[in-house]
Amino acid sequence: MTANATRVLVLNSGSSSVKYQLLDMADGSRLAVGLVERIGETISRLAHTPLATGGAKREREEPFADHAAALNAVAAELAADGLGLDSPELAAIGHRVVHGGKQFTEPTVITDEVLAEIERLIPVAPLHNPANVTGIRTAQALRPDLPQVAVFDTAFHTTMPEAAARYAIDVETADAHRIRRYGFHGTSHAYVSRETAKLLGKDPSEVNVIVLHLGNGASASAVRGGKCVDTSMGLTPLEGLVMGTRSGDTDPAVIFHLARTAGMSVDEIDSLLNKKSGLIGLCGDNDMREIRRRIDEGDEQAALAFDIYVHRLKKYIGAYYAVLGKVDAVAFTAGVGENAAPVREAAVAGLEELGLAVDAGLNGIRSDAARLISPESARVAVAVVPTDEELEIATQTYALVSS
Ligand code: AMP
Image (cartoon, rainbow, N blue to C red; front, top):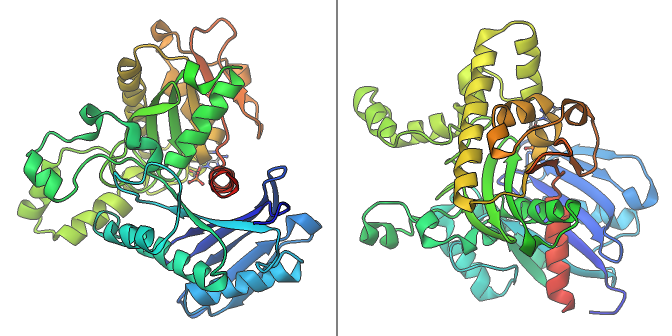
């Protein structure tokens, strides 16, 4: 790697999409961002914004048969802005990999063995890891000489003690099938817990933080001194909070009941709990903006969905307060957490005895900056901390390849 190689391309490959960002780690600036959607369909769409040149967003609609075709098109767009992947300034490509199992506790340079291991984890992440593997292989073909780094969604949670990570089911069966709580959104929880410490003027090792990542997927984590000690997602991203389309926690017997009494197949129940539950199952909408609008118009179904969402959130705040014993901050992040003041207000309402409160004026301010929304006198800080998973992936990737 040459001394002026400070750029990192971050790739987040989904089953039919690739999100990407090119960052310059000399100053953390974004040089280009984009998204390819509907890969493999008759018409795919590529949206590319060359921030480095101040150019406008460019959109292309054409069929990309596979990830290789999509990434070649991305490479061509970057080259058109003088940001080509053949540039000596490119230091590495960082890949978001959803499932790293128990073994990947850190960002890892991708070798043949590492890639084989990511493939071996496909049974526990059938929706995500195959796409991640495809993205890695395609990027390797484009730049075989360049370090490629896997940054795992699960890595931050590998510090969870066994008491939090194990389900209370037969140990032999659990171990034979790698059934345990892995947690997800780890890159966001790591970034936000660190940024929260920064906002408090402290080192991450000095503070205990409850992070509430509330996007379309949602998860909570308890972070003690910079290390995760519990998180709400489990074997898969289905457990925990009420989400846009996922149920979060239910009695596992709901599944047997649906199979036995409704005659539903495992795949149908999987789809029900992952895609037709949560907010969308409760009220027909999964966008919190729309739900708030309906509540303002007196819609009772939307109001109940909101109450169920907040009730679950409050239970996790209480649970993680107990897990941590002492809490310095509660941090809200992601689409809902960063933008929905009514969710933040309702989640903390009535928790004054725990030292938790929000200041209505501060909570109502719209801003892209990390900020405190608790009254100055509050014992526990309540913060809004925008997440930035791409920056975190780029930072971890660059740290690894430049060390
Ligand atoms: P994410 O998965 O982090 O991109 O979050 C997406 C979700 O954020 C959407 O489904 C919305 O429910 C929510 N969201 C985005 N903007 C707002 C807003 N201004 N107010 C309330 N919710 C929002």
